[in-house]
Amino acid sequence: MINNKKNNINNKNTPQKSKVSFVFPVIVILAYGIIFLLNKNLAYDSLIKTGHILIKIIPLLFLIFAMMVLMNLFVTTNKIKKHFGEQSGIKGWLYAILFGVVLGGPPYVFFPMLKEMKEKGLKNSYLAVFLYNRNVRVMFIPVMAYYFGWWYTIITTVLIIVFSVFSGIIMEKVTGSEKQSP
Image 1 (tube, rainbow, N blue to C red):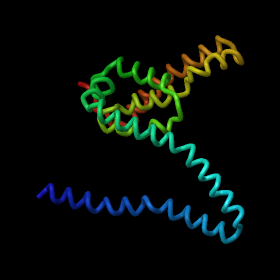
Image 2 (tube, one colour; image 1 turned 180 degrees about the vertical axis):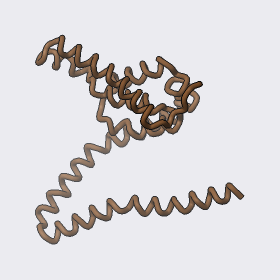
Image 3 (cartoon, rainbow, N blue to C red; image 1 turned 90 degrees about the vertical axis):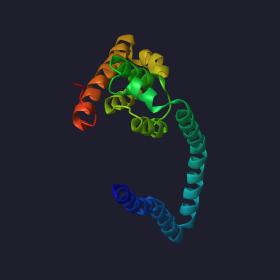
């Protein structure tokens, strides 16, 4: 009886969710239609630029897809909980800092992967630390040191890392989604 109610609730939410997902594309198509009626050259230029952006994004979409496949194959819920869950301790903080600093690329590439990791047990605090430490770009440290000096670069990098931990602690307290250890 309870399962039936649960399934009915899920079934009710699914069509509504799919209706909402079509709102943005419909608005975009309407906007292009209006622009086409008002100024055909502007609409044509806009479509060409959109096509160029799409061509640039396609490799990132394949990268995201590959990361999701690899994650589903090799990263289990137990591994996430072990390294980034409630009992991970200092190791989880260090991994979150390290991965945030080392992994390059735009942050939106990691959002699907992080969502899946969160569903498998990644703590909000480690998620915040990872995202915060994306501001430390290893490849830019020599350039930053060239323009601002080594002391400035080192102090800024250390402060970003230290405050990322504070950000993670605050996130853990604010969201309250993690269980408190006894």
